[in-house]
Image 1 (cartoon, one colour):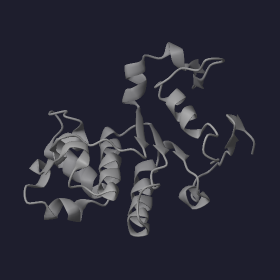
Image 2 (cartoon, helix red, strand yellow; image 1 turned 120 degrees about the horizontal axis):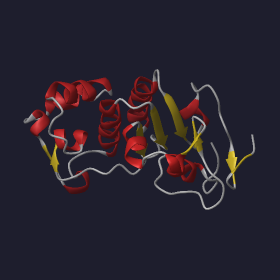
Image 3 (tube, one colour; image 1 turned 45 degrees about the vertical axis):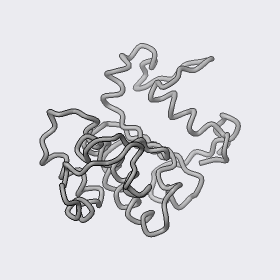
Length: 183
């Protein structure tokens, strides 16, 4: 938790190696992140942020990120697991339903849940959620909370939030301020 500009998102970008630290080093399991193959690391980490990117393509493509070897049953199961099963069943073309560029035709809550389905399908060891409920209405926030509980169950998870209720069920809470843990 922490105020805007406190370093929360920067910390997650460092962990996922979207950027490297200017000073010092990050260790994962005692191993410097710079010594871990970036692709290997990212295979084991699912990163879901508040700015979900959807692509012009099918629902399937947007969940699998165009990985055609993923079975439809696995994609459908992931969508159901995050609470979008009813939404999927309402689509005339199911997994083949076209999503427009930047998610045209999909609400921000549906887009966020599709990003959760991506992460769920990946079955990562580490889940990083950066403000996952910041752009959704209260009804969708409840659905996201359930999906977040399912996605993080049995996994190491880092959840970045401004509101305490977003992290009400976590084991440990850190308060960041100016890039430092202050509480």
